Image (cartoon, rainbow, N blue to C red):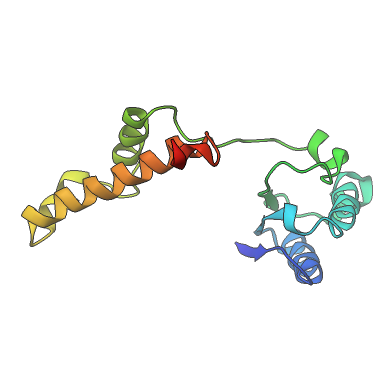
Length: 150
């Protein structure tokens, strides 16, 4: 998988990765599409070629194009109408956020992870403190500037 973090001047790199991946059947992840609004129309043209009959003949069946973006009015509607959309929102409430932090860890066996640390008396409270701080920040974010003043 090729990753491209979009911004100023990265549109041509993304275009090259898409063309190459389309031929060989790999995946391309374009991150932060909202930061390259001038290139989004080019992306719309590329996606239209993928949908056309010509594109189907030259597109490998394993090719995938992933896009990440914040909501922006500049995002082309043609892309939004022809794609699968996913959203990821933080859970509501501190308890729910802590549960997500401890149950969706990328570690296969969480108990072994906790027990493997040589300084158990320091590690567990520190890990809980970090997860709790993260939960507080996520919760207070919803209040904007008032979240930290009141």
